[in-house]
Image (tube, rainbow, N blue to C red):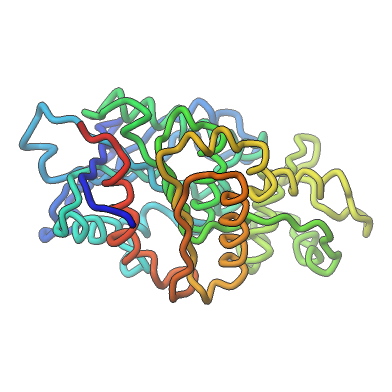
Length: 346
């Protein structure tokens, strides 16, 4: 079982756009800042390489100016944003400051949470490395971490950093964690999307995607169409194919096996087998999903099975809920306690 120890998050004063207290009742202090990302420069989508970042500082950060903190990097989902997660756009299925405050009241030690805004031209980055969208893996693991450590009072070491995310952010957590185990000590993937590989896509699945020719059409497309085009942008970019600079699994009615192979190679259930030593290096890995989030719950069970086969230390849970219904509460009752247990806060 997970034990509650102490939890610390540090986010520092990067270049501050503005600071704000989200609510007078909140225990911590909210800031929204900007962090430059060399890893994102020159992306073909034209997305700004300077990203907005939400930061939640614990109550003691201002009063004890000698104290240093562990940091948890939190990644939002597809079509979502840090603004939604931190309550800047009204009601949402999660409010990070409120969820964290509730955990602190239950004994979790003070921490700082950092969440970059990964909303892009395609409404999400998949936290992947692509010429079309930029190297979001390196932005999170290198650019953002380096800037936070340089500008905030952090415990600037692997043992004091955690990485977590929901949906697309859960996917990013597993992907970045596998590739940068030297940066983070623990992972928490909440309802991680896109874990499995589609080995036999059908033309019907991509008919509406193939009809998108410009940004205006993309803006009014359905969620699934947007998600497929976003996936193409990060997993099968093509600098010679404007306006989106992507290749899709179908072209002129024919299945493109090389594109399918590129998508499959980016599925964590496929990638995992190549990263077992890295995964075994983590102090803890936690993956979960709601039982009504049927497709994602199935991939969580499959990842649990793979981890068990290789002896990767982890926790896995299927709880009562859908894709978003349990996220706020699980930040309070599972995510915060887990990182409290495993991150070095001294």
